[in-house]
Image 1 (tube, rainbow, N blue to C red):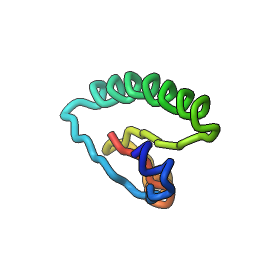
Image 2 (image 1 turned 90 degrees about the vertical axis):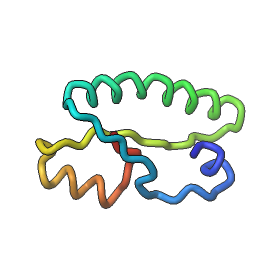
Image 3 (image 1 turned 120 degrees about the vertical axis):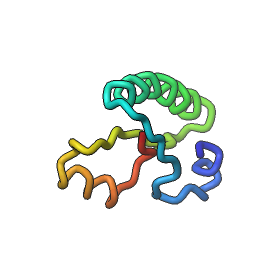
Image 4 (image 1 turned 120 degrees about the horizontal axis):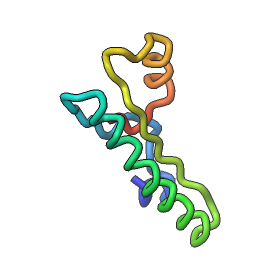
Length: 79
């Protein structure tokens, strides 16, 4: 996804959906994903001189309707 973004070919759409049976596990995975994504973004900012936005979000059955709609309007890589 980062390479596609650098080439200007990354669409603003949901690309990955990860289904987890436990909400707490999903939150842990999201937390553990944020640091590597930030590191990749910082490295690309340093080497390419621009930011590449790859977003991640946790959506569960408890996600408020407005938040779920916002995810659809501005997709993220969903966990």
